[in-house]
Amino acid sequence: MMEDLYLTAETDHGSELCLSPLTDRQIAMSGQELSDTGGYFLFERVGSGDHAWINIIARLTSEDAVDRMRLMLSLR
Image (cartoon, rainbow, N blue to C red):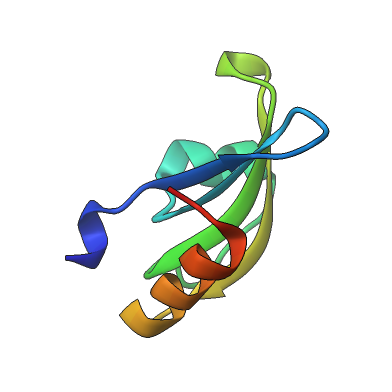
């Protein structure tokens, strides 16, 4: 089931590439206002804890898109 996935991969420059639904806290960490928060988001997380920030890259709305992105980016 799509809602159960949280996929990640480390990048070469020390951040983490993530593919998952976004929590309210993660949205706040991005500094962006989103009109639709449904589906999965591809985002980069830099840092950890309260000092982390999130850069939202893309929104995916189908299981097929999530699976294709997972394979392309070798997310696990």
